[in-house]
Amino acid sequence: MNLAFYKPRNPVLQQYIKGYYFITDDQTDKSLNYRTYPNNYTILSISQNANVVFSENKIAVVSSEEKKISPNLVFRYTNPIEIYYEGPSSEITLYFKPLGLNHFFDDDLDFLLNGKNLEHFNPYPDFKEKMEDIFNCETREEQIDQLESYWLSKLRDKDFVLLREILTAVEQEIKINEIAEKHHFTRQYINKLFTRNLGKSPTEYRKIHRFRNAMQMRNHARNLSALSHETLFYDQSHFIKDFKELSHLAPGAFFKTVNTDNENIWLFI
Image 1 (cartoon, rainbow, N blue to C red):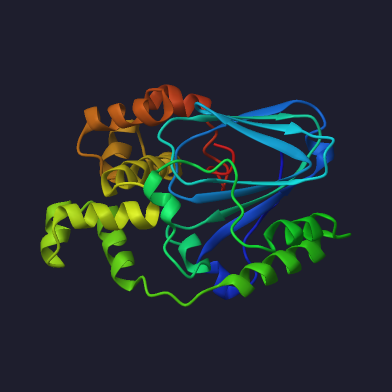
Image 2 (image 1 turned 90 degrees about the horizontal axis):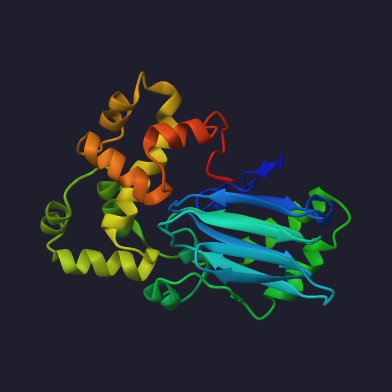
């Protein structure tokens, strides 16, 4: 399915939201499915006139005769997820950058501690009503304007400078013990910070970050051995192990299956 992916027009939102896309009911009027692989974005999908059902490694979006808004939130998965659409429904999906969603709430996101994706997610009293209004806009431009205005109205001033510094260090493969020592924390406290604010451990975050980097850089590496080195895997065996764990495929088989030429390769994979 070919979809336009919109990066936020507002420069403030660009700091927190990678982008968003719209699916219309004519695009889902026949059965549609795809597979998505683990990433570190927080993905908020809002479906109109559909029931969204989570099961093990599967999400089904089933058309409903009932007029309703069904939001769901996916922030943690370490296995591929199969997404199924059964019958016509419309959808708006937003990709929040790591720590991005946290900036739209006054308090900590306590649900992250549970580590479980949310089949039913209603973040604000006016959320479903506003999403219904956006779905019913006459033009895409109007939808975009209202969607961005709504999220700007929910933005909160939060200081994540320290946590972002730690996040960058994790992405750069600095050892957790060294990060903890630099900031005079324990390793356990670093783990707690990640779980409370990202819903996953730094080790899990780092593994997924390497995996996604390898997907982005595949076409620039001369072979898989060079790719594993350039994306900071410890060695070839870790490269193969992590790919099998996160995609259920060895790297060679994965890259034969997945088209990494797409600029937004994480959108549907």
